[in-house]
Length: 278
Image: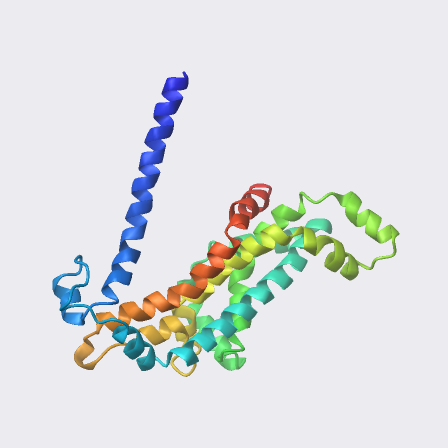
């Protein structure tokens, strides 16, 4: 029995290793080719840089200059940070309320959030763009409200499952001590939600930082986020300098990768305790 279990574990380990390598190869190719001349990227994309093809940091300097990188990263950071903060704050309060206050209205609201998770963005993007324009949300501040709406479904679902696991005795003790509902949430409930809050923040930050379609439709080229700006690394007749493109992609990945690794230990814990309990 133990021998079969060992063989099974070895097979699983080998399979996961192969999958990991398969996922890492494209990323390594992008990093490798970001240091090569664009002609060599087309002809020898799988070869390491040599004396002829190596460009040093030239691709990075020229590529980031072309897309006005610091302006773009400023818009991306502003939109991502404030959208994630809004999602964490408002969705945690909403989930706590609809979980603790049982009734037909709160149940209906909960299932509306769940239903929003299965509606494809393409179904609502035209009406959403028109509404954003009418309400003057077509700027880097107004788009935060749109991300809050699109991110609320999954976030409320995960928070609701986590809240169900918090003992009611904690809240009853806080009320006896004279806490108002708001004070109780801030001082008692929200600190307990730390693992799921970090999970929600990571998932939404990765989505918002890498999102191309929503910023392009709503704020267009006036306030270029990183994904939108990268699309403008094109020269005449639609040709693309892939050296500049790959250099910009590598730099755009760095902030979100650092954020992910800094908080990764909370991801599994938050997903298991939140989504599964729900």
